[in-house]
Amino acid sequence: MDVRATWATRIGFILAAVGSAVGLGNIWRFPFLTGESGGAAFLVVYLALVLLIGIPVLLVEFVIGRRSNRNPIGAFTELNHSQWKIAGAVGALAGFIILSYYSVVGGWVIQYLIAGLSGGYSAGGDAEVFFVETASGTGAIAFHALFMALVAGIVALGVRNGLERAATVMVPSVIILLVGLAIYGSTLSGATEAYQYYLYPDTSTLLADAVEVLPAAAGQAFFTLSLGMGVMVTYASYIGEDRNLLSDTGLIVGIDTAIAILAGLVVFPFLFTQGITPGDGGAGAIFISLAGAFAELPAGNLIGAVFFFMLLLAALSSAFSIFEVVVSFVVDRFDIERAPASIGLAVVIFVLGIPTALDLNYLDAYDLFANNILLILGGLLMSLFIGWVYASDAREEIQKGRSASWFGGFWLATVRYFVPPVLLITLALAVIEYYEFLQSTFF
Ligand code: TRP
Image 1: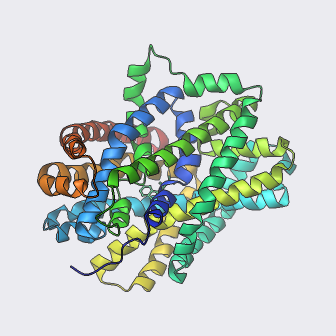
Image 2: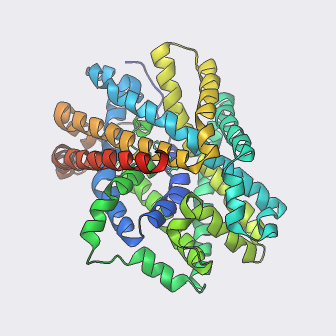
């Protein structure tokens, strides 16, 4: 085994993991899906899945990474089970697709940042029209290119550590901004209706609704925690054995979940007050609702610019965690040097994303396939491996760093008997749903 550096401090690892987890998933994707899926029932199922599936699977990735000291591609070989490398390949494919449209949405953020600085989105007055103009067409393609160039450039220049450290500023700033906006939202006329929609599930239909939203909620739980692709395997490969994996997990999941919930508390009062039905906002929900609100607020353009700047940092730090896995896969599999592989892949990912910058139906098609199907499949494979093939070593590994000993057994039982059937059911529902989506959207 080669000697690898470990994170110098606990905070280094936490920052990298939080930087990857907190991103467009929390602030863009979560409110948008909640709105499309009918509100509170989605929130309930999502929170349950974060707790019951997200936490165990995050620990699965941490254990694979720390045990093998490798990225997901090398990990299974190092652990002498190289046929499970397929899980790494599924993850790399997912990353490839996700980054292609993640970058398009990152491009929207840059456009909104510029608009905030120049007073652009308040001038025209109509937040929905502004979103449609931003989200597709040549502008969207150009800013998608810029976002991808930033991701590749930051990795190539080796300044990503600096950007990870920026998380110390970015995460608290995002939280403060969201809390402030949520308080402002609570004073608006649509607030009561919004809370009713977002926070109070209809208990008489909750069970049926839960089945309905299961694939989307599971996909979101994986997406927001950066699971299913091996990102967390890579990060954990650098942590020391004296560290308590469980307490780190609690912190990462807690911060990530809090930011998503807050984003909902901002978006829904704004939407209801502007008279927009949540589902109708679609992928534009956060952008339309915020731009509309910033246009009203005193110093709204400035607040808007700061907000979108922080969101850009959050999106960039998530984007390279994805890029890294994809680049590592290609470097490893095809034996290419890192620099040319990065440039080549950035170009390929840019081209792959172009359809999603022209038509939001393509964005949905990419997104549903990569998240609801591929990420879940990746998580299922890794959980089966840990629960059924590598269980006793895994138990030993999680116990290091003084996790309470009952916890190892409890976790392992969850990973063996609970996580795989739930993910299997989710996967089956997701495949059916995807088929129906393709039929109704493209044929
Ligand atoms: N979690 C990030 C977000 O919420 C996105 C992300 C980063 C991701 N790395 C990932 C999603 C790996 C899936 C897999 O924005």
